[in-house]
Image 1 (cartoon, helix red, strand yellow):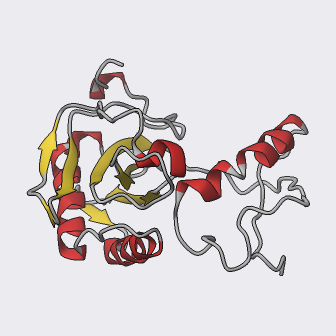
Image 2 (cartoon, rainbow, N blue to C red):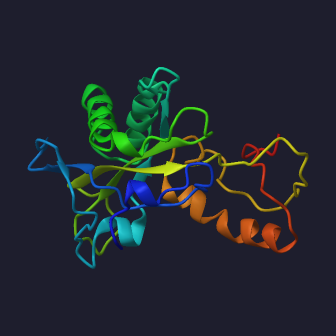
Length: 217
């Protein structure tokens, strides 16, 4: 995929898509400690075919946004809350938490490095940031990884839901997460289970799903 050029963007019609921006942040946990993180231009990750994340889904992620202000400055929306949830998700998924202060600073580094891709004030767009962590050990039996890769990428996006026009929704019998399971954390397995009912809803021209708690209340 070619690197995104800022001059090719239509700020008012961004959609909610991935675009390969110049910089992202990466850090690795190995030998019992987090290595020093850094910005990189390489959007490719290299994993063993037996990497834990590929078979047993040891992965967590977050999503937050940076907004251009009227005076041209850039604000992040409560990154400390995302850092805290990321820490809680890591503990639940038996992963080494990435320090909250370093998490927030890494987010800021990615925004600064890709500043020209923060949509202009008044366009309705924002710079979406996706921090995530995966277990990378080559593992055959079910077990937690001892090594992890933390990364943050960014992409300019429009509104996730367009406008305030009333839209139909579907009540479904599918559950996304089990009672006393992982529904309270942001891990990939929760979302993989929602793909089938989401596709079925779209076939019926339903715009989305509301997910209730595991007791359906």
